[in-house]
Image (cartoon, rainbow, N blue to C red; front, side, top):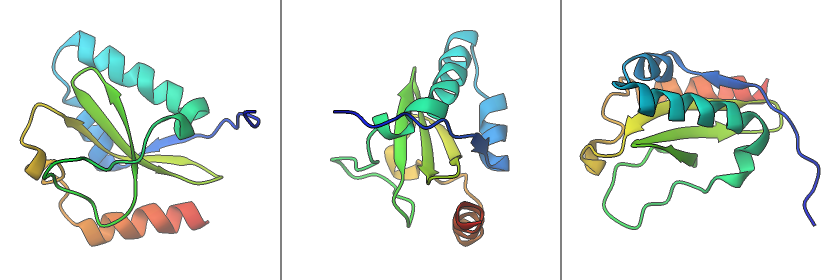
Length: 116
């Protein structure tokens, strides 16, 4: 039996918002924005990010939702879904999070916001 569906606000970090605006092509952009809307009600439906191959990993647990050629990487709690990266999966997986300038600052931002 499935529990009640909780609608959560989806917020994007500045980096994720920039990545969203830089998605080339209408099809991928539409698929990503559709998936972002779905995260409001289905954030637990997507799996934990745990690739079975060598790939970059953030220093915290996260989930991933795939949309077109893109992965939407996020963390969620009972208050919000925070998207911290939107990455073209065709790129080198070992450099997946290389655009994140300051991982410590990101981690602080994500978990400070989520604990408020």
